[in-house]
Image (cartoon, rainbow, N blue to C red; front, side, top):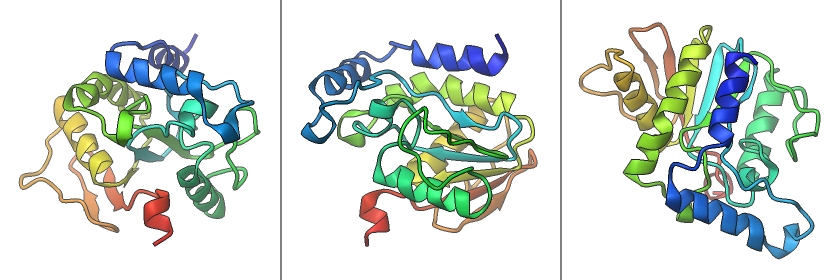
Length: 206
């Protein structure tokens, strides 16, 4: 079992946060009418993509009826529709659609993850929940040794990436980089951090 496989298993077996565990399991049991025939994943979501990636896309958390249903990050919701269509257009994804874990989608030179691995109530993780998931992002950053570009989808993911790097002992600039759409920061450890609006329906439909 390689390091990525071990990390993915550790993530998907996690029950550290009682609030998140209770919520994601309840959503998986109750479902919504349009997905009543689905067997929801209902577990934490590991990262997905090319272990030799140079581009790492980081979002906030799985959607209750997206990743929490399908078992793959940014899969089965409007945000994922937008993201994977864009990745496909630039040659990072084998297809523009991402509907379920077995749909054949493969990423090339790109890895996608979220800073919080469980769907949170009202899409708002607590500080303790961010902290509990931080070691998983640290380990992904350690394993993804070829990454040159981090694309942070939204301010929360942008700031949490920097907190994670600081926790790893990397020198985060002071004043700290500020999020804005299209912002680019070349960091001292050789990575370019890019800020992007989160591809939520609220953002992409307005």
